[in-house]
Amino acid sequence: MVEQHTGIVLRAPSPSRNTVIIFDEHYGKIEGLVFLEKHGSSLCHGALLSYFPKKRGSKYALENWNLLDMPLYWAQHDFLFFHHILELCDFFLQWDEPSPEIFRLVHVLYSNPLALEERSAQKSFLYYLFKSFGMYPDLESSTLGRWFRACINTHPRAESLNTVGFLTVLDRYEDLS
Image (cartoon, rainbow, N blue to C red; front, side):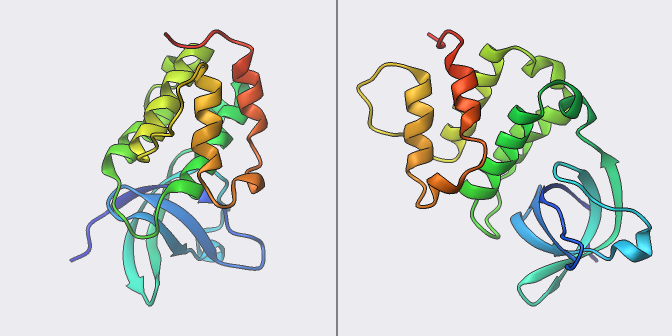
């Protein structure tokens, strides 16, 4: 029997496709099949879902899915930070590799968003997220902002990240010491 899972939408389905990229609490980053016309709603980046995953080739059919939460707080207060976290998860998580500790960390965005309201808390969050990805860039260095950039630059497609500009916003604030 398939158990119910929880997942975060990293990439929402396009109008022409029924596939979605999910950060699943048990399976890690997976490609899911969703049938929106049956459900009568749409999905957006960052939606928190429950579903019953059933393996279909290299993908998972997300059966009986339900919307648990939407990133409304982040949409109103700091969508750039939230989007940056989703994009980093999409870039650095490996396909079908369980990452429960990272999932719990990212789930804080839903369970306690006020804890990440301050820029210093966001920097701490990013620091722990990169460490959880296994990032330890070799820097004798200086600022946390440079360390974040060094982490991002380890990815072969680093230049295609859309939210790198968010780091410039963080640079305006004092580094953690």
